[in-house]
Length: 298
Ligand code: HSE
Image (cartoon, rainbow, N blue to C red; front, side, top):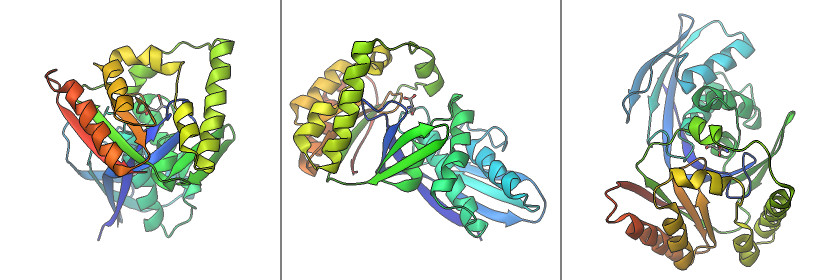
């Protein structure tokens, strides 16, 4: 019998929190199935919901994450895994992270929970290293832990789960152009001008305060990214128009989800979140670009 685990999509960065802040959506997400087999080694016997992903366990995030866990515990038996993708890759919704998180959680269950959920974060980060060349945690941590999660430090890893301190709804629109995280990271400038840095950490600190004080106006004033969004947004067709449409429809703020091309917006009510989704969809109506769109409570 397989152990079956679902892990959700996530929105990373959340504007001003590049590589250090993310939150989980309710859906979409991926499922990983895992069962024990006596022969050592890992097999990936099926991948459903998507084509083109490798079933070689060394080339697939679920295999890499599971292998790290087996090696850490010096387990002698093997695993058979299945990956059921509920979302596209290269979407900016933490697709590889959802697979990695589900794999880590499922393998931990199968092994009798030797690790706490927080201790699974570094294993899931190995999936991100394979997928994007960078072991960032701002998708895998919220996919594993739920709600908002802050990554205070990477070395040593210090992950701060914030839960969901305030009622928020997220609209996500995914224009179907594939954008690889590795590419969207490779174009970033390595240095940050001081004035932009000051505004960014002011916004991130204020966003934290706004969440914890349930101050919607402060959340809205803080959802800005003057550093990375301008460097990346040209990769996303109609980004400026889509963001403006979201704000005009009443969103508290909007930006690039992860490394894109998905666009996310946060709203105080579900009704506004649906209006925001519709407003962004309108922008793409005559563009010939296909969309996936979701509204999810945070
Ligand atoms: N923080 C990462 C980035 C998330 O923006 O590159 C990738 O989903």
